[in-house]
Length: 117
Image (tube, rainbow, N blue to C red):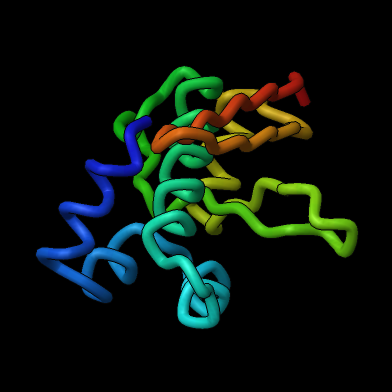
């Protein structure tokens, strides 16, 4: 994903955009971020990777705030779900998930691997 796309949306809508795509725990970290565009780009790419791995995309019972990312104590990205997202995972037989994130040269890449429950 191109960071420039998120930068344009953030420049236009600011915090409203962040509130629209982030789960409340993610938003708490967002407001402390020194680079809000990078933060939003990484989170959106991660969310998209997870819902694509689920096979739903941002449709079929999953919305952008039904999946989120937090960092474990070592900084490793972990997947979290809203109640509705967790219900959809159970319906689809989705179990534990793994996520990698990277950014370089104005691009963000996220890979998600979801195991069967």
